[in-house]
Length: 123
Image (cartoon, rainbow, N blue to C red; front, side):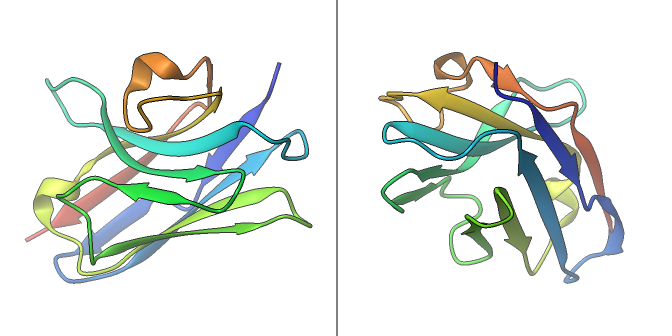
């Protein structure tokens, strides 16, 4: 069982930046994928970005050019740098782990989840 702990959420104004962190309890193995999802109030959980064990990344169209993934393998931490934040980015953000994930931004492909961290962007 992989344990995930998110941090870094908060409240910012539109145009601001935040960096989310996801601490992972295990080392990366081939076939692992770590991803960020978000769930806005009254909406279904949606994929934001995913990071494969080979370093490949996937981003939702809504965040391309604004959000950037990175990973520190020494600290076993995945980061999501979020720039040019918009009010519509307001959501609970979750880190997730999956193995041999085919559809990188599909939440049903992931079976380990963190508790989430809230991001609020005001206009």
